[in-house]
Image 1 (tube, one colour):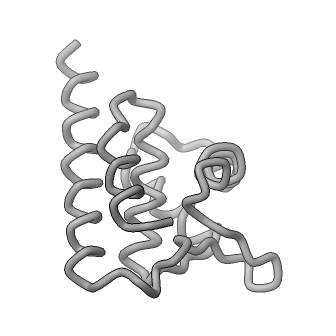
Image 2: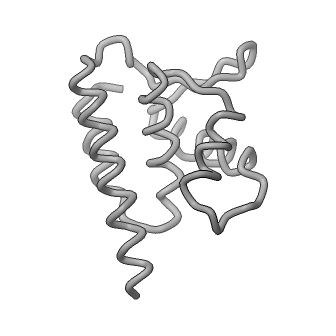
Length: 116
C-alpha cells in the first residue's frame, strides 16, 4: 500500500472499535514493518487495560477481515508475522509520521468515548 493511501486510511478511523486497527498498524510500523500475532496481541493488551479477552482473536479478526481487505497488510503463515505492504518503500520519516498519526487518532478516539 502506498504511503499516502495508508495515511488517508489511518486518518479516517474515528470509532472506538477501530482503535485495534490503529494499534496494529502502529505496532507493525514500530517493528520495521513486521510483527507476530503474539506481539500484536500483547500490544493490544497494553493499549487498553480494560480488554483482557483473547487478543489473538482480535488481531486475527482485525487483520484478516479489515486490514487485509483494505490491502494494508500481508500475513506469512510460516513466520506467523503480519507485514505492512510496501513498507520497504517508506522512509523512516514517513513511518514515524504514520506512528504519530496513529497515536493522535487513538488518543482522540479514546477521549471522545470517555467524555461521552
